[in-house]
Figure 1 (cartoon, rainbow over the protein chains, first blue to last red):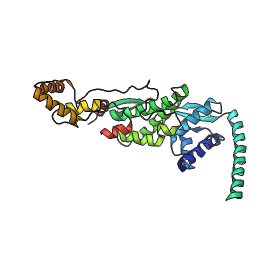
Figure 2: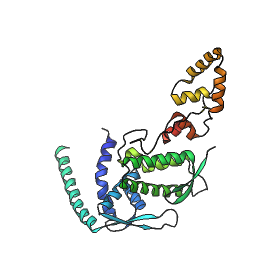
Figure 3: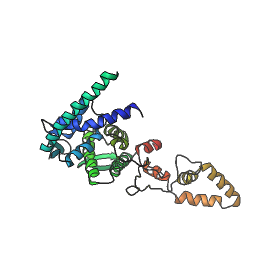
Figure 4: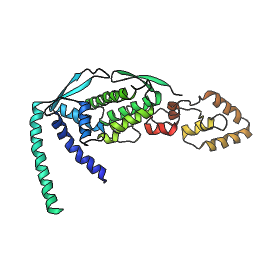
Length: 110
Length: 184
């Protein structure tokens, strides 16, 4: 076990939550989702994003449309669905609970 | 000097070196195979190809140039190696179920390992035997009289491995970026 692996595992679980957060108020291009996650220091390799986006789309949490781009290939423009928004609210709550739990353990044992 | 291919990456035409094309194709195949060639895997690989198109578009815009193996390695470092993308990778050489990529293994003369014509070098590479042993064998056959004749026949019949692809085929290795660096 090394720290990189553990960090990657931690990030993996949270990435799906972050994608829904990014899409919660606006529609965003796939490449811009990547850039926003990078800005917030959330991902290092872009490839981890595509499987998640596809799975969330197949689960009905997201949908996309194609938009032509002036330079280069057409791009996917993602939107959160109603189901996705509901799911996001549940994840918000889960996240708060998780933070509280971890913080309480840190307070008691650090 | 390398051969160039014109490739269709997600609908945009790019000029790409042959070794770069092979490495890229192998990369995408490995990922798709990692998803057991499911339709979900195809969709993901499609998205990756789109992203590759965007990355290469920005990279080759400054001056008209072809996509090189360095460009491909750069793109893969950004996107992530197949092992990092959460797919099932059962073999390092990329033959996860063996059905999508058959290793090409051909007999060539090896120009990088030749005493006379690269015949022993090439035979050694194909069979994974030390060429020195083969050269000793031919010298021994010299004393029996037919050694030189066999050598000359082989020299004429076996082609020289010129390109990167041919050198990889000679060793029977797949065109992964790591292997390509070995022989470039």
